Image (cartoon, chains in turn brown, blue):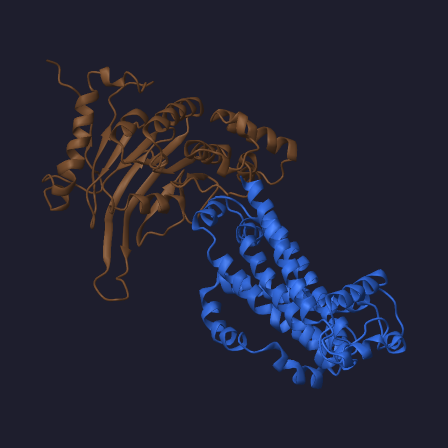
Length: 288
Length: 281
């Protein structure tokens, strides 16, 4: 049996009780899943189910109480340049210009590169996110959407094996979000980047993801199921809703968020549910 | 509109200055014949070097103006230990302030980094800082004189001890409040702790650190005058005390104005430096 590119085994996270008293909180436990190189995976679930914690464990910024994560056959221990992170709040350094922010990452990845090469490499990725005109601007001169694009360029520029994105478009208005999503689709198609992304937006997940991991509500959150996206690539935001399977998939996801995520948390799991192998579904419109 | 506002403000400033000088002038007019007689004695006036002291009180603005003009015309004259130009005295004071301040920065900034980065060190050192901070720097003077046995070095030590606290506290605060996201960016890029400190924490905390330095410099300039009054010899503080002993109030007022002007310049320099490292989020 071949190992998946990324493998999560028996992850569990317990937050200690607050000093004022009370019990320890187990946010999630028994989390098992995996995915292959080049896949775009979204994880959906309500606040408090531990999505961000899982992402931080994958990034190496946080430690799980139990369980292991393997990437490319090696255990994930601590942060690594192999995993790029796009932060929800863009996390640009305000005293550096756009290109300096990207160069900070590039210099960390390839310390031996000469200045010209660093600059050239940075420009390539800044132009990829459509910010060629704002290279020397400081972050405070950019709109929220532009800042997030710089964050994306910075993460892509180190050419990581996997890209981790924590609700990267959460703080953006719908219009800007749409534009950047389209760009992300293009960049990922061009680079075959492996991506793991947290989102609250069902349509965003349908547009971007090959696999959508559904998490039930916390505490004791579980992976309820893994949904495979039946819509063929390339998906286009403007007309993907004409696809016959679009609404079947969308309704499946919305139903999950509205009711099933809560019911599963209350214990209504299928009799054959096995946390080691969460059910994989592919919601498709049945032929009439 | 902004221009007209600053224009109007300038006018008000000038009017206030003129009013102040006017009141001063009227207040120091020779009131009685006796005082006028003292004043009229040309030999006495010559003896007092033009800065004649009225028996009845303060020198007039005109006299002080003359003093300022003569002193500034030749700021670096040196007629022996008790008669040096204002430039020399200020240079002494400034050099002591700078020496003490730089020594303090060498200790305070690294220590502030340690306190800001380590909650353990913060908790461990905080009681000492809180205890030492409110001590008037001049209270250290006897101890400094006894151990260092040098007046000039002792005043440098006093400057050192008074500048260290605002710098250390601000550095610690600035370092501790660096955004977690920036540190996480550095961590995911496997930037080593030393480089993170230099290229992320330092620029992030620089505005707070420089604000601390600005406060320290302000305090140091306040304290040097008092320190030099105590230890004597050279410096602007000694100059003030020496002129008081000479009963030359005109020179005392001149020195006061100079202390204010230099203090303002020092503050402006740090204001500019702070502006240079300040970033807009």
